[in-house]
Amino acid sequence: MHAIDSLRLALSDPSLAYLLLLLSILGISVEIFTPGLIFPSTIGIIFGVFAFLSLSTLEVNPIGLILIILSLGFFIAEALVRTRGLITVFGLISIIVGSIFLFNGGAENRANPYLIMGATLVTSAVLVFITNRVAAAQKRRVSTGCEAAKGSIAVARTALNPEGMVFCHGELWKATLDKGSATPGEEVIITGLEGLKLFVTKKRG
Image 1: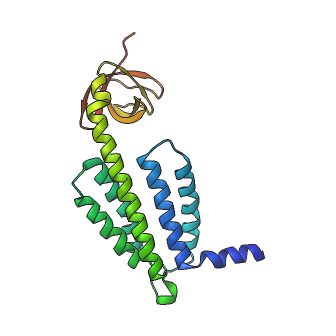
Image 2: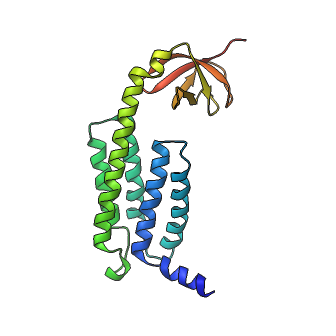
Image 3: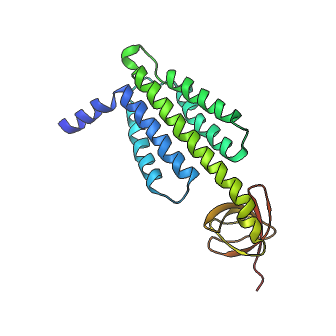
């Protein structure tokens, strides 16, 4: 019981709760941008569980929490849409404002302001770096990847009804099947490419 009480006391620290939350977001975001690594998402989920337990003992402002989580959505959107940094700015504003207003109550119930400043800067820098790398990789693969492989084979990673994910040239792609449906593991033929989406058809025979 003493160990459990010590854990509860440690988790009631706003600074620890805030740090666990950001580490969870970082781990999950790395997995989203680079699917298949498994380790980052596992760590992110573990930190997320502890962050949830910690936040449940504190006076949390739901708006602040939503803004922090929403910032990840902005960074993902920037990687997919590429607005030359416009959406990234919204992401940075969202995570900064969310961090400031995450906790209710007095100063003793808030995370250390220096921790907020440092963790926000580091998290934002990592997310911006990852989104830029992902966007650059997407740009390269549009011109040199499956676009040059029309007529070649891709493997469905999820069910295509008619949209889903396929594996092609070592990468996951969004794909749309022309008709019918395809099950995970089924081979399909690439017929075209539009932006970051493949168009595929089922193999005949």
